[in-house]
Image (cartoon, rainbow, N blue to C red; front, side, top):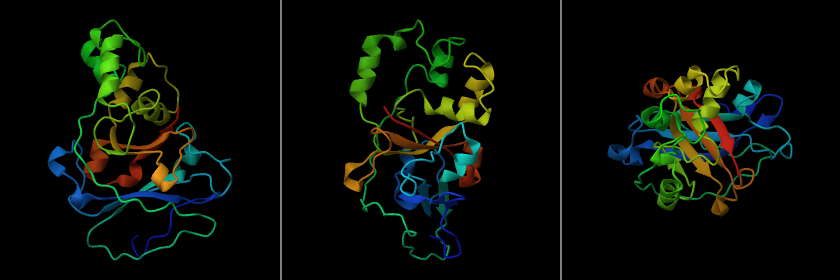
Length: 235
């Protein structure tokens, strides 16, 4: 971590757990669809319930809880210092991962797909088009049936598209699913990273769920990672 940075904390609840780091310089940049820095490290933190047995949850609909998930960008030229986990937190085992290039696809009820094939169709539901046929959905499932860890691309949502959850939160839950503003806002967000439950690291997010961080492209371009939004889903 940066030598002068304090460990991320949710005031009144305690420090966040360190989830993952991404070495930007080692990513296959030609394959990325998001504008990540050419160097430096992204650190992801999340209040995982260790300190209160899961009583306090980080939820998109609860703005006061948003500080329970953070992204910290450490530039390549910053002075850094190794930190131990704060008292009361058991660190997750370190698991080294290697990135590989993969094609990603989203579900037909994602706002961008719906806008292409059935403008005006109900958000989040099937509509009358072959991309909503069971045969096509089965083919999508065969292409990618695991959430996995991912940087950029289309998020592999466990439930409804995570972009819709973020849009609802940004709009304070004041719009219905048939309101065009919700679909428009959902289109303003891209996946920064997702982290699946991981046996090798003793990570279990709810019922075999996943953590997601999304960001607006303009904030990403300005390296305003503190503006990334978080949500999580489980089956």
